[in-house]
Image (tube, rainbow, N blue to C red; front, top):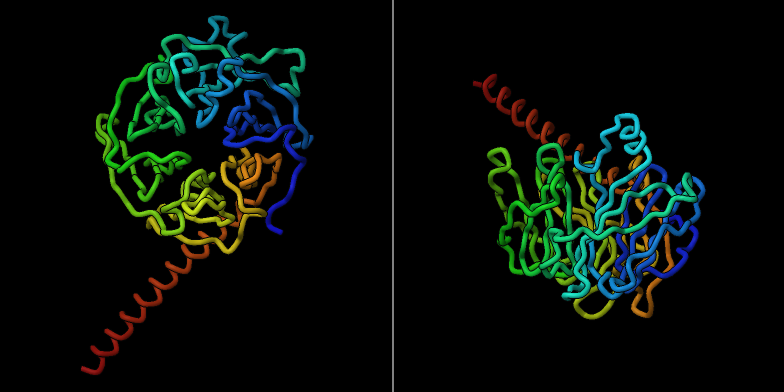
Length: 349
């Protein structure tokens, strides 16, 4: 089997949000689950990190969690202390989810490894007047991009794009996306100099032009197998291939299919590999060394799962390289064949 089963999760997770660190994968809440855990890649075990505030438990449905660089305002004035903080701390932002006046949230955590600092207490701290406090941001998706990766791009229903300055954590721009609607469980990734959004029956390329002063949009088609599917997990590998795992289908069933989108020519392929089970609402995350993809949690139609498995990235990159070199070989074959035929015609004359 291409998928390797790992130790079960401590609890069942559905629509979890995960962040990849050096030797850890952080699992930060899920559908009606406010617990956060760390999975150690070497130890291959879990440790509790913390919990979200109790009033947010029902809000953790379609929330987002990202790791960002520390802003200048959060760094210490003491240079020695600043260097130590930079080494030991990871800045995490949590936002979005089911919204009401009582549970809108933008939270910040300065995470220290529970494996190396067992006595340190990791806590989610609320950010007052945060960028998402007054917006419906269920099933939010976000990526970091822009000059020096200093901006957070957030998409959320119905068709909104917000740009957040990570230094001030304030919204600096908003636009309405040229799509029909943003479906729950969509995909939003960065690939080279563009952002790619996959939702409902549409794909959208977003490029930053004029030194970030304008955004250029291009709509493209989504393959038939994903047009009526949502709640799939996804990863972008080497800025070349976006891989989609499972999902919930229009007929009420769960999918075990894996699809690949090739960025260079916007083409699609149904992968010959399949998920171990038909499942939706998983979270896919790539290890920091980019050798493995972890698939965490999900729902099989009966209940949320404790399943945790992984698969090598080369299972998907290898296919991409094969088609890339096949394309190159075909091009040169027909090019030289045409050139040789032309030379033969000239000689006959």
